[in-house]
Amino acid sequence: MAAKSQPNVSKAKSLDSVTNDRTASQGQWGRAWEVDWFSLGSIIFLLLCAPFIVYYFIMACDQYSCALTGPVVDIATGRARLSDIWAKTPPITRKAAQLYTLWVTFQVLLYTSLPDFCHKFLPGYVGGIQEGAVTPAGVVNKYQINGLQAWLLTHLLWFANAHLLSWFSPTIIFDNWIPLLWCANILGYAVSTFAMVKGYFFPTSAKDCKFTGNFFYNYMMGVEFNPRIGKWFDFKLFFNGRPGIVAWTLINLSFAAKQRELHGHVTNAMVLVNVLQAIYVIDFFWNETWYLKTIDICHDHFGWYLGWGDCVWLPYLYTLQGLYLVYHPVQLSTPHAMGVLLLGLVGYYIFRVANHQKDLFRRTDGRCLIWGKKPKVIECSYTSADGQRHHSKLLVSGFWGVARHFNYVGDLMGSLAYCLACGGGHLLPYFYIIYMAILLTHRCLRDEHRCASKYGRDWERYTAAVPYRLLPGIF
Image (cartoon, rainbow, N blue to C red; front, side):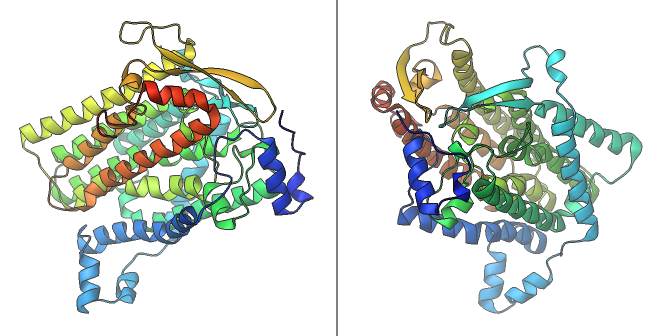
């Protein structure tokens, strides 16, 4: 049985002794304990380059009508200098700072001060107080699930303003897009740094902290597993869903309003992007309880990767299609538009049904039907840091018998549909499908490494039963 670590040990011992003590005391799944040179190099590259990548894409749209090669060509030929490009970049403004502060404060209030009532009148929706998965230290956290409620109230206010109140212009997000970028960066770095300090000096659960001895890795991937303030404000749940994903559909609506203001109409491509991405966002909040069992909550610690990524990367790069269509209003032919819609809907169907199968299987402990048949399972067990032996089951029926991560196939189909809605004039809108292919492939590998550490030989039996990770016959 693993020995239990002492509370607040980080205050009294050196970092190395903390690392050794905690390694010996915890379950061995989750975030890495040791950092190889390749991982360290990747971490430093992302810390240095990811903010620049976001700035480059947004700047290219603002100054070069979304032509990604435009800035490079200008600098290479001497037509512009870096200082010239920077000088044309809008700075942070008081208006943007006030707007962003109001936005985040509003989402915090919706998250912490308004218990969920949607589950009381929406059939099939699960909200309110829910339990998360067992952490490596054996902790089971409780969460206040009210994301759908926050999304609905936010959008009701948005539409009320657009049609009745006229407090602000529907184009307000686009009109302050780059100044808001600086505000989002400030919050992203602030919350990531606070989470790092908190993990060292006053963690919510000291037993679920991980220290590698490498500052850069700890800062990016996080030290604390589930940092919280008070009983209910959970950093991972809030920043993963709010304010970034709630804002996703508002950003698209603002882009559509700007396209109409500039060009006199909203194109069918912009409508498709708004509709398909709204389906994904609403699905996320409708199934927020299911999200508690995903890799972000169950395995990832909270650091710069999630903190800055949710504040900056998600709202700014996941919405590139709508931004592009403001500058290049694409009107698709009817067959093209129908093909994009069909691809997006089929992708969503695979994504949702696969996840529903897994959720149904978990909720009923396997006492259900998958594709009309009793599900096939792999019985497995694992040990948490408190020495408790836990039993679990791995599903090998339905889409989960086709490939171990077949839900990602649906996700990729939907991502491709967003991009195809923008036509073929520029590369910029296709960044999303390239990024998602890399991200989800990496997630496959990360998830399987953790599962192999968690389940041991039981995981080997599972991979023998379902040999392909993502695409049958290929990968």
